[in-house]
Image (cartoon, rainbow, N blue to C red; front, side):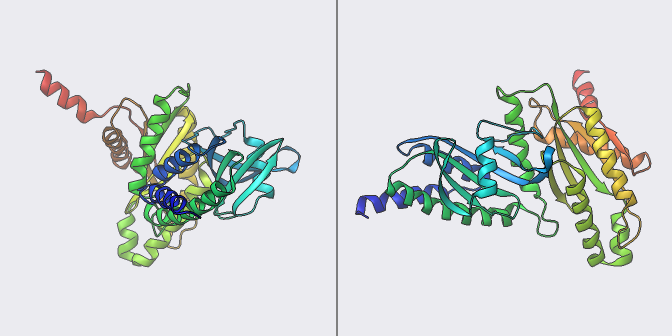
Length: 322
């Protein structure tokens, strides 16, 4: 490797290392790869799990970057992604699929969410070595972000990641891909959780939080986003649906919690729901969902309340108007 090539390799590596979030990391990697000669396209995916389809075949559950919110997402590379999911190995590999040349970066294989970067095109041996080096840094950064962006106890995404995810959801609805369906944000609060800690201790309280998070994973769809917001509060973003379907999904989860045999005994959850509006600031939507949650608590707990406009805003506006 010449001195100039070494400089190029270090410069590209530093662009990945400078990334502060998983979103930024993906943007940087795609941008770098698209600058390489003979690369026609780059697509980044998360494989969130698998499901059985007609005929007993197994199909990966895919989310594309930038965010694809559809539960049944498909794109022009669907068959390629399925092939690599079945046949590909972890790391960097060249593939000839359906008459086209691909390079695949496969990270966290068999440990969802798996990361798969699909590169279409044939590159020089030097650029291939660069891609392998970038893939190593990409994997290392993903592992770092996983620690930074997830709650250590429940392994759900944390409050910091919630804000960046909400921004991406809003970008989705501001773009040309706007859908007739909507997304919704719900705040979930475990009822009387302080009593659990006071009566059984914090270790039992932690067990309740872990079981609660696991019930969230089982109850919601792979296209939805789950977060531990803080303490006994959790948030779910329910994507590409209508209000009635969102309520049915949340009520199913509420019943799952009510019927689950927690180590500390019966647990219930109160839920506040609001629609996600791309024209509304994120703090305002959080405030509205929080007001709906407060209403659910006041109305007897173990229930869902919906609110799409803050009563506080109405009062403030009245005061300013008069």
